[in-house]
Length: 549
Image (cartoon, rainbow, N blue to C red):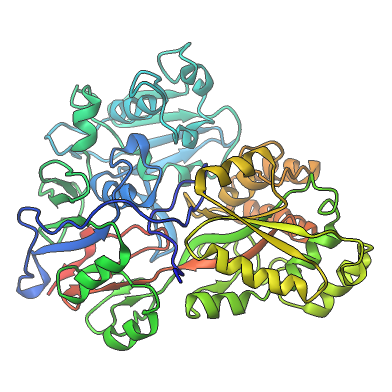
């Protein structure tokens, strides 16, 4: 029984798929070995990934390409998960207008691209406009929504404008961004790896060539060209403006199967790998557990830290039975989340008690009152809805995409619902058909996964629950929720902004709009030659800080 999710996790406009990954074993690449050097300096790290979709910021829509590109490019800001604070990256400072619509970033002096060109405000403007330009790759980037609030976005996307009028280069090192509506959290959006700078001097004119060996401004640079289904090699950029990387480079080795990668890890051919199906506990025993769940050191090598993502059930509110919040509450209360985590995921995952996961500013444990297992309360809620013991309620359909352990999860839910009198039928289909069913509203209860692009509550509440948003698959509409979200976006005081978002979260929890099931977590392991490797909740590794011993 396949109990794993794949490594590839898509952006917030797509969903965590849970199907087989692509790519083939990459063991024949040149110079794919590298031994550590005394004192923790030098050496080449060997890092397992699946075949990426893209490593160019233009299209960083999933975790594999982002794992590479985040070390090739520095965006304006950076969220430091260790310190749990937003810090400057390519920008040394920034200012926000009182109405949270104008953001002025001051870039660092002396920063260079990997080709030796200086990093300027024009390069950020060029990069962001490149994402919106219909001519860049015959269409705009599928992730240009990160900057959809920049003034002029719609016009450029439609091809009626050649630049984003909301972007200005006040001088070579001053970059001004004007939004069409207030959004105080935009400084977090600016941390996304897709918003790094691209050289505007012509290096990116040939999209096909550049996208295979992108030129960035980060601590590592490409070492050759990406070889499909085999490897991507990067090396330390010695002219980097910040602290230089301690290792010489990293070989991102591409495997089709996580289980194959784990076998190679056990043979000593990888330094970071996913753990094979069913081997979490044995891996902990053999390699030791990371103290914080994110940092690998010799003897403490198993990484099981919580990720900034939630597995949940979406409910079709257009369905006449699920229009009742009491029915939705009954479903949520009937599900034994801990049993799912223990039985299918070896206890490695944590039951979700709200849609916002740990690691997001504003997260609260037990935030949603009905996101818990209480069978008697579930029966009472069902009776309150007019269906005591399930009487009068026809069989419902539990839909999911096939593979990834989703059918097994739904089977357990089916049994949980039967315990309160709800009969459920399983409806499993391949990924494309499943997405089509969700998009067309041809479902009653389905499963989804949501991963934070940036560690803010807005990244969960606005896309999933604001009226008519494309990712609002339940069809939920609440004027009070909409008004509070827009009001929260305009608040520049962080504590006050989070407080209002939490009020929104409280309303959603009472309405039981969706059913949070579990929070994702790492299930990865590092070799004993790795020291101080931090693998963040966003599945991005801070390679520049890692050492090899």
